Length: 390
Image (cartoon, rainbow, N blue to C red; front, side):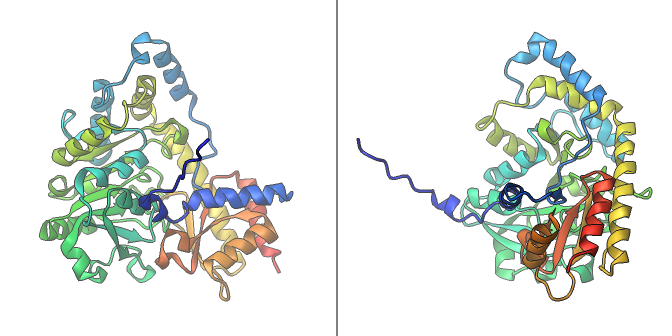
């Protein structure tokens, strides 16, 4: 029998190892060696999906009309509730027919967007440090990426003046992400207004990843990019129910904004997927309509956890900025370590999984990211283990 020669496509060869898959591999190795792991690496909520959302899914799943292929554009009731939620939360009106596109999670929309709006040889501007999918999605579309430095001195907001001028001339798309993963930095309306002007000046589409706008503390309410004057003229914003309602495995989110960009993204999706299971859309509609208290309950839990970890790390001399949003703690590594060295030491000597900052890009070197997605008792134990490190 002839054996096929199977070789990875060039676009696959070009990809670095996916950061969180690599972390999973290291965790498995440690567990196989009997290490008692405290996992503060990947941002996956440990709090269950609220019962009222599960009940809504059950009722939706019992309805036979939801067992067939879903509408590509999403159920009208879901789109209408997205518009209502967006108006209530941000004071921004979005047209239910043309300015909303339901997604199989915001990651799916982010991954498909470059296929819709860039050509091989075009440049996509990507924040560094930043979510790895911005790079990989651009590579799949045949585009090149050029990084926008996010540095502490500028509050981890993009330094547009540091963009390579040659890359800027070829740029067609720019990814942003605030509140930010991994740095937990937050953006102001004034910043978004600058982004709109920058995008218009250079004819660049803006894709703002807003997965963490509802996870904010001490009374802070993050703003939407679409609140900036002219934002709909240049871009779209991605939202997700994953972290907001503890629905990471459900895979449901949406994009809002410029109708022409959404139309192109919808065309890619129509050729790649068959929509969101309608029972999940029913449950997502319920979450947006009735979920305000559930969101506040999450915030209360994560705020307590944030304080335990930040205060604990500061008590042993670490330099930590207390974040206003997200469930991430982005902290400088102590003197004498690289990001990877400290990550390895924490795993091998303390059984603590964190994410090395350089996994999000070169500008992440010198930092590590903690995720407070474990019970407070585990966070207290993690602090004690770090205190006892030699």
